[in-house]
Image 1 (cartoon, rainbow over the protein chains, first blue to last red):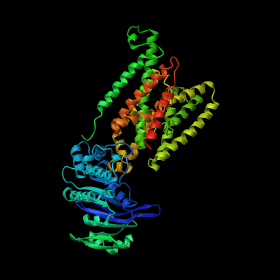
Image 2: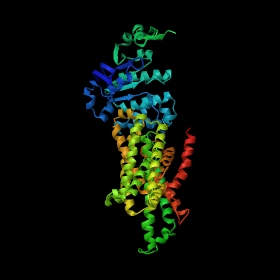
Image 3: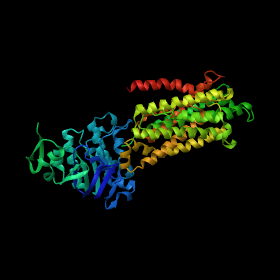
Image 4: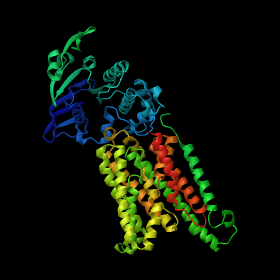
Length: 257
Length: 328
């Protein structure tokens, strides 16, 4: 689905991203973690084609990013960024409908109704987007990007998310990640997501990448990456880990007071 | 279900505009109603005066109002800022400065382009300021306060230069510049109407074609990019088109303030932010407002006239004040 070969991104003398290789398969949830300023958002921008890497190449569906037409690419990959304010009184349903811009009129209503239902936004449809709370706005943005990728049949598509749960309450954090898991398994979506909550990441990730100073310093299953030593080493926090009581393969962390 | 239909409201605006046109055609210093016109012969000087003076003026008011209001809506969308307006940002003054230069130094232009000379000058002047603001504001990501301050600075600088130009001009030129900077539609002729209509309608159609992309731009440049929009190209087109709209309007009518600010805001209250409806609604509303203002301007103190730009400022200024006080 997505292959990045030795991509680097330099900004002046600074190496923001340093020689990263990455594969993401359809149906897989890859979660990127790392301390502030590790280059998580920059990596996302390189993988999505917003920034062009200084070195290396990134392919989606075996086609290099620079050979894609913007409109065709918009049908197979989308990005949910950390939420932004709007200046004008758009209704929620209008914001979600913007997600269908690359797709034309086909399945317009079905796609929007379904994704608004999935993200628990249906009751907000007529509200002014600007008057929603941060969490509600985040759900609407999720509905918008899901509407963009919506297809009547399962096809391989790529969904990037930059901290999609940062403003959500506990219920909606669980709801959103369950939804992503379901879409990945049932709809062949490849999900690549930046998360700060390590416990949440361990619960839902198929694979975790730990980014530090623009390099992948650890990658693998949650059990391999989320260990007391590695998190202490790369984040510099004092912590302990334990096994999730319902699933011993899943590590969870707790901080020392 | 997922997009609202505002067609009824637009039709109401069309009907309002038609009613205003009929009222305007009936009133003026020349007491002549449309009813009387049908009873006088074709060669009557009254009919000619009506056809060659009043009718073009009415059409000019409508078309200039349309250009000002729709360009206001586009600029506000482009800068993601409900306070963006050609007057506040200094685009109108840029156009005014260039026109003042053509009034003072007419010899610099060949006589063939002099009919369009002021228009071209106004367009270039507006474009230069537009470009400057564009380059500045996209580094600032729509910082509202700074944008307005930038407009204040531009207006102050151009005001000073205009002062110098007024100082060195002779009486006739001075009168032309002053009258022009207050905005008036008195020199409406059929040639002018045709030129203005052709340019403004062309720009308006293009803007309407891009209106959906303008909606998507509201999500921010990066998100619009992910939706397959060529952000830089769309922005360039829209900027060029709004400069064309403002430039043409300023060239034929001088500076008419606040129409571009007030009308899109009022229409937004009814229609919402969807530019596909907003721009069309603003165009119709702008036509109505400027026609109303111009009809008042030439009838209230008939046979004298108030410059229409003064009148719109008198209405628009307090409205703007109210807008600021309401949105703290």
